[in-house]
Length: 446
Image (tube, rainbow, N blue to C red):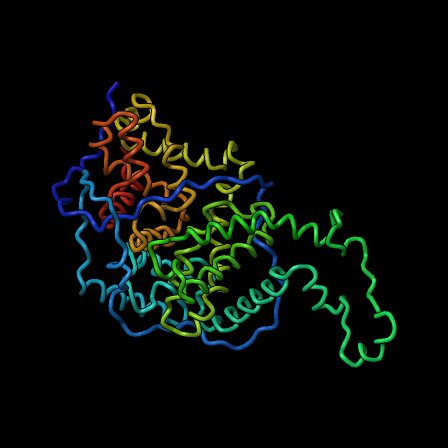
């Protein structure tokens, strides 16, 4: 039987330029904590709406300096085609088209996806508005933006007020704790002070299943894990790391979002590595040039994070790992996709060298490739993931398959050790070409 070879279109001499800036060293792979079956997105209370300005298009600015600030130690050469990098003129043209589209009274999501699918130019705050539209945070009708944004930001404020306080603070706020003003204290100075009744469930040492304090202490372990992970988020970026008040405030925003998400979604709670998925959303929204939007980045990020995770929720549920929808099933789909498009490479990896795809693809998939490339390139990849009408997971699998095909020559020449090292430390890549190859896999069977 003839082995399937890599498609002819991949061998075109068109792909011949140098790779883009190298990525930072990858972080440790995420691990699952114990948790129960997945819950759907949280049901939120309807809060009275207040008027607020919607995000508005802004003038074209300089490219994001992040492109020049992220460094790496990886300088590996590898088999790589090179889609022609967009010139400044092309970037400005695409940016203008995106600004025009999101300025329409009713935005065409199909046209927006088409324009954003091959990357959104940096600067001008375009990516912030486009991602919010693609994730359903903003409706396609611009007239509805003020009320929708106001409602959701108010809802998030309510979540913070209710979920980030300990039980004594909540009781105090509700007027259930002891409250003695100075006049009462003086009048009773010769006798015993009055004390409020404390029920069994309200006592801090209560182990009752309905005890607010018992639930509070159970959450402590997860909160400590969140704290550790947030502190480790992108240590190479001053935006997230360092002793500046700005970095600290950004860390605190990530922490609050993750704690609220964990409490509202007890089926998933928090899985190590979610901080890496959250970071690109918060970075993009916090850098929105519209001050009103930047100041509300935490609330906007929360709802967009909920929507994004909902598309990958089964990958984060340990009890579904071995099911037809869990992470292992997703990794099997990647293996099948590679076999379909490049059976020779698939056979060498999984049969000859016995490189189990879980050894490298688990991190690729659960962290949405945020640890395999530099931060700026990750944003470019996410433009494509969020733009696909089929949903981000199918696109993610095609991108992962393209990553394997683009280093096929090195993989075919390697053994177990060298191939595993290569795939766990993926070399620098031309992102435009990689996304081009991934798109080809949609319509070109092996």
